[in-house]
Image (cartoon, rainbow, N blue to C red; front, side, top):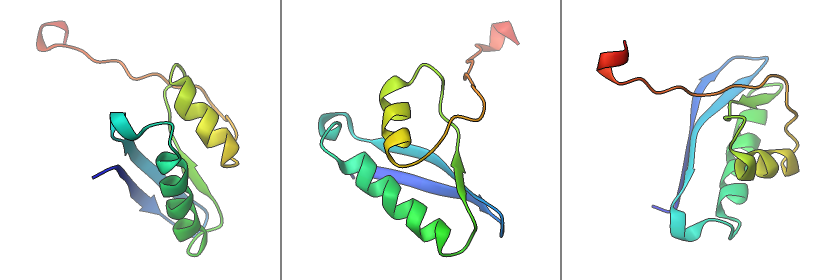
Length: 86
């Protein structure tokens, strides 16, 4: 497995992409862009637009998504907590 992505939800207005991942040794070789483009096209055959979330500090992914036509609407960050912090 080199690349994976999921469509987590889809309605007539928008389909949401999540879980985009390219295996480390295959990054920066175009697999992420081609795979994500395929998922976008699949969504756009069924919905008016596509959306995804990406952490604000994931600069490489954000650059790729911008090349694919995505625009930043809001900034997000994932925070991980250990059980003792909950």
